[in-house]
Length: 274
Length: 347
Image (tube, rainbow over the protein chains, first blue to last red):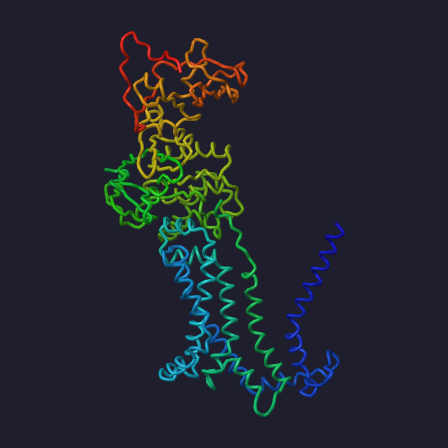
């Protein structure tokens, strides 16, 4: 009994240590965002005893670029994630419930596209985008990020759908449900936690994507990643403002994560089978 | 003609022939049970009838109309799945009404039908619960109710009771049978449990390796099994089989005798050693090892004063021998020669 309690204490300590290590950069960014530029680079660094200021936030919001980039980020991440789900749900449905001899091969082939470093296809995509007029456009980013995240979403949804008993869908078919009704009234509610976590993942990936967003857009379609990068400018590095900009870019994702959390953690109380 | 007719229905999964040219007539209004060991193709055949699998070749007639290409819902059949397959995110009311809602029936009609069916199955107090909050038996009744609401041409049951405990299973057997008789709807019921088949069926179809081994009423199949396989599969405890000299005396390769036709009688001519006695109260089953090596079971009166190891004499009841040829097919009963007593022999 006593040794068990000791193990638990040690495990708890490890968990705290790990979480603090993971969260430290974020906490430090948060603290730095409230410092002046001078204090941000002072050595030894000050932990809490500095002159707290909101000047960085005020400055960033006053410039107006933030709102522009925020809207772009929401459109690009939201649009590409919606497109991904629209394509991945039917794809995962067919692979999970009507598998053929080639389903495994298709799944592996889809994943293999993620093994190629994006820079490997940069030149052809850049040239295509130039010719099609998609450079510096939100449409271009939506299409590209959707294509980039589609394999992961299809995989996640596939494994999620496989946990839904096929007999429930067959029952719906016997009840006269059309394919659309089967997907919307039966499969989607049952797979909601999986669909929500897939959405959240591809949304975050698109939100944080910085290779394509830095290389394919310049002014019109700049999302928050490009906005943050702009603070590392030829005039110098503004640590405090950079931190404030980072915090402002994280907040919307945190908000969505918080809104999705019920779906993310909830396992549907089954009772359909057995 | 009405009812369900199958003509040469064949289905393959890859190279595996699951049903092999099945010809079968499911009589209208009758309770037909498909029975057989697992992997014999009975569930696949039910799914072919339901439309959940496509028929490779052959015809399926429902009420005289070829339905092989018809969608599952348009066939007008309702299925009760082994796993119940209720919609876990919907209340019992929504589960029952789903088919009507999908068919865009008026809301008042959906409510009326749902409540009517719930009443019939004693589900009214649970209408607003979800399946997760119901017991196994209640879920089973919801699954049946969902089939009832559609007023189908036929019920298809796929081993619906296999997840219930023995007591509930016995109770549900009677309930399903009563409901089917009350409504007079054709039913096809798949099970691997021969006792379920015997107690519920108007007509039993015994399957083996994707073929129909025998079809008939329970008593026909019990009394006149068409093959050694059917003889061994139907009836519990299973039929005793004897080969060698005693079978040869009957002009057969193998003979079969049901446990109730094997009597322990000092005047009997088959010697066997008692191995174990199963005491069931109303009667008891004596497991015996014959001198020729076969294991036999005899049904006896409850209070037998034998012990394992005792040697007893067995007598076969007159006229109770089933004869099988080299292909394990049943042979017609012989006309006994005048004066001869073919039931008196030694092993």
